[in-house]
Amino acid sequence: MIVRLKEIYEVKGGNAHPGMTAYKKKFQTRDVFVNPTHVVCIREDCNYKSLLSEGDCSADIDTAANYTRVYMNRGQSGIDLVVEGTPSQVERVLYVGRDLLHG
Image (cartoon, rainbow, N blue to C red; front, side):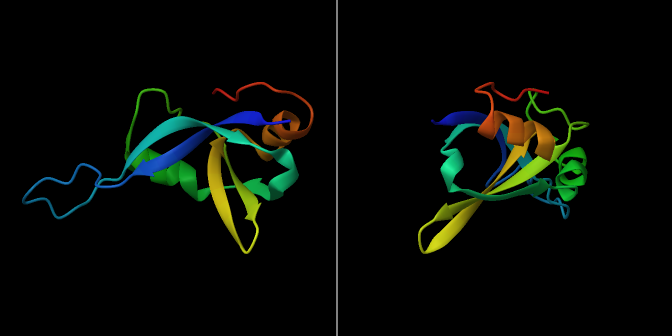
């Protein structure tokens, strides 16, 4: 069973302007489809709240929400995703329901 989560990701390039010394990161969301049997670990990502509050976010990102980092097995290596929701909410979606996590 494949489940859908709402991933938060950094858009490379951001919105730096000539003459600006500070670089403001830009974040957007996208649907990501995950096979729960490949999930190795999930844990809360507390740093993402501060990154989002300081960055330039698309309108569908709730900067007050909780975020979870999902670690995936990819054979010889791994990949990690930051998704919206608490670890408990993400676990419920991965292993019980098929709902999309929205803030």
